[in-house]
Length: 242
Image 1 (cartoon, helix red, strand yellow):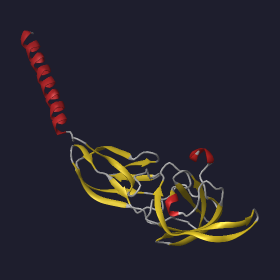
Image 2: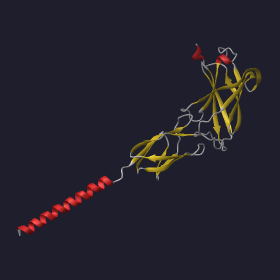
Image 3: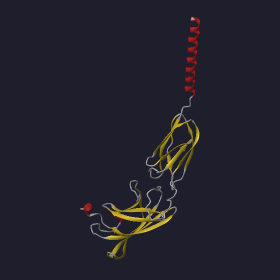
Image 4: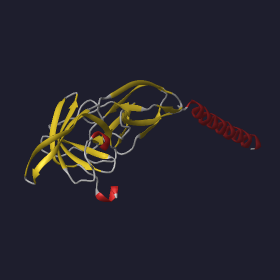
């Protein structure tokens, strides 16, 4: 009886040891995963690109307001990372080698074109520093566009003094003609592209309430677009220069 009990005890111990060894072996042999993370953004502005989809080894994420992405539990190996942005940006593809732990890769997305751009609508705003030209892109349905890449553009304007009464005026003396500084305003909803003319370049007395007419020409790789603003304020708001 004692011998049988001893055999049973030894058998149980052996089973436990084998099971523990199997678990330990499996633990050591289990694959250790990698994480792919980084920033993804418009190459020129640094803004988030809404709706961009990032894929590695079948794992994906879609970003809308963030510039940071993260994909987890990726077995170490070589993969092709793909970032598919909405129309207007160029698809990003790169071969990467994922190692155990964190793998960082920043993705600058290059703008290609303004999809559906048919015309521009411009407005002006005058302050104590000068005149800001707001440029809005318009689609075929006449709706102002809100999501588009930052692209190199040239802004040229011609500014005349406005002569005559309201509703019956014409172009008078030419005050300015040529290229103006381009500004990208990430906080704007429609008028992300802006131009700026300082008062020093406009021969007017800003303490006199005069108005002007401005022709705006915007040149992109995909063409040239024009608009005319007929109510340009040739003076800052009064409280700004009192």
